[in-house]
Length: 259
Image (cartoon, rainbow, N blue to C red; front, side):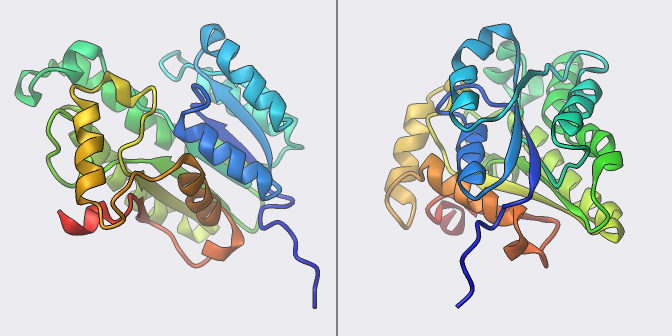
């Protein structure tokens, strides 16, 4: 029998948005590294680096700082990542979401135009910008782009507020990018994990109640783990998902199926 090889062996990838050991981006990075990928990671700034650098060191990945709100920052980060990865990006993961706190805790109808635009730029449009920046570095046989969504994109989740419409736009972006980039054999996906105790989620009102409700209603009667989310991401990024594009994959213990 042929010797088993890690599915992502020989793949080079950029993973944006590692915040700490509990972040979804880190769960994805860990599992991609285990499956053989060479990675470059990003964190927001020097303050975040203190928590993320030991994680990056543990998997032998260079760590860059990138705040997508800064003009030119994303382009510079992608260029540097490609340089560190021998000029090739087989995949890129976008795990970035942000909205001004006062907008996040208010009603959608009270959202300011400025706050909405900021949330859209960071959480949605930066995914399109990431694709544009990565395009010169895609190998001839294709690449994969992955972003992170949430059930609030397709149904109104209490206290999720402004991020619901933003994530809905992000999932629509996935479909249009899949259509446009498909002729280049570039696949585009969203991963939609169930509620998890991440740093980003801690900014939501009553997130503990949301997690408790997920445990109660999900068919598996539990929350999913970072490793499970990471494995699903690694599958989408690898050769096993070569015939898939333009979809949102749920990793939520079946919660999305029961409404």
